[in-house]
Length: 241
Picture 1 (cartoon, rainbow, N blue to C red):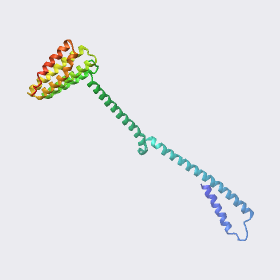
Picture 2 (cartoon, helix red, strand yellow):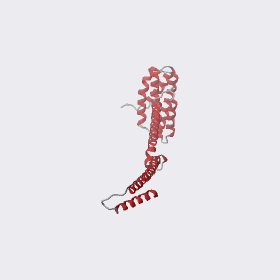
Picture 3 (tube, rainbow, N blue to C red):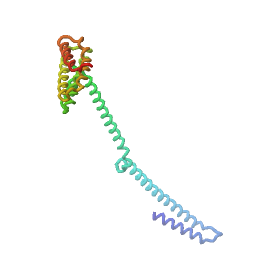
Picture 4 (tube, helix red, strand yellow):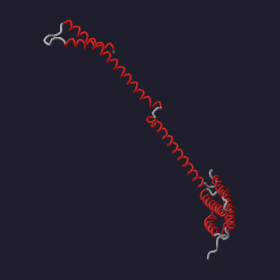
């Protein structure tokens, strides 16, 4: 840069010298050759200086661009890095929702399958355990009695379903016994908690309509069980007016 400045100063000195010459004539050949040489030297020096400056500027610009490009990857700019983290979070949230929905669907299907289970099905013990737990957890005598009667109605439906499918005597006999046990427990508790409760008569009438069609499909001990149960609940039905 100093060399270029000195060259420019010499050129200005030559121009000043030229301004002092008469207007009608031109410079002598010696001065002309010296001026041409000085101008050529100054031009080459200026070109090299300009090239050097342009090279340094290009390197500085490239370094800044590289810094800006690398900055989001290093996590120093939250504004640019945020979308990169937001997408995995959305995916994890969506996966969590799908998993929760899947678990809820499985639980719903399991509950339906358990509710529809009949004696002999793999889920039937779970169904009976659930009913027994609901009865034991009832602190109110009326509620507990009503749940016992609901269990008796459920056993009656199961007997009807067994007779329509397999008709296996062992399962039918056991279900009939459980039906009678739930009926007696519920009626006894309800009579003690609510004497002359109309719920007993309504239950007995419903059960009679369920059990009567079963009599002709049963034989042996199961037939006797159903007949004895039918006599018992008929005594609970209020006389018609």
